[in-house]
Length: 271
Image (cartoon, rainbow, N blue to C red; front, side, top):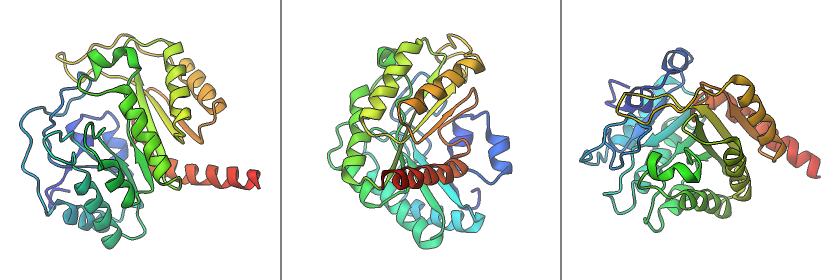
């Protein structure tokens, strides 16, 4: 990562799982620079004037993934509202570079919402990632204070559009709890995601990165995460990961294997 001058969300977002994941050779590459055009109140990534787009970054990502011998990689990015396509072409080029240098590596993208960027979703879908992840982050009621600049139903539309364009791509989304939501609102998010044909949902405890960020409303007990997991499975998700330390990319490679097995089992039952 250092040699190829790459950023990781593991470091930039101060993820609590970094030691465990890196010990297992799991990493989430963050493309499109390290400065975000949004100022979400839960996120530790720097906000400000974004970096210049590096046209050689996709190739460096592909080379780094090959050198590290990763079986599964997650590629995410900062929001780039300053770019006409929101960075969609850069995502597509990165997927293509990984396919070239590490053809056996499965690829998961965790994208921004591409708000008001016509055609951006289609560009990423055409590059055929194995998993297309976009997080809702929280319940609709809390968007104005937690995720300003984003729109809940725009994010749902993105996930539905991916499935409409290419049903073979697994879709995934996640939320944090402990921000002030109630259980009924979490169940409604589950219903909204299933209505958008999302395959995989993650639910994790929000942790306040610094005193300047949104406060932790409460620490959700493990039994409540178990309730969320049971409910989500009952609503038809192929995969659910719900625990205090669950994050979008936590155990992503192992989860992808289970996700693929779950789909194969489902297709066998339908026959």
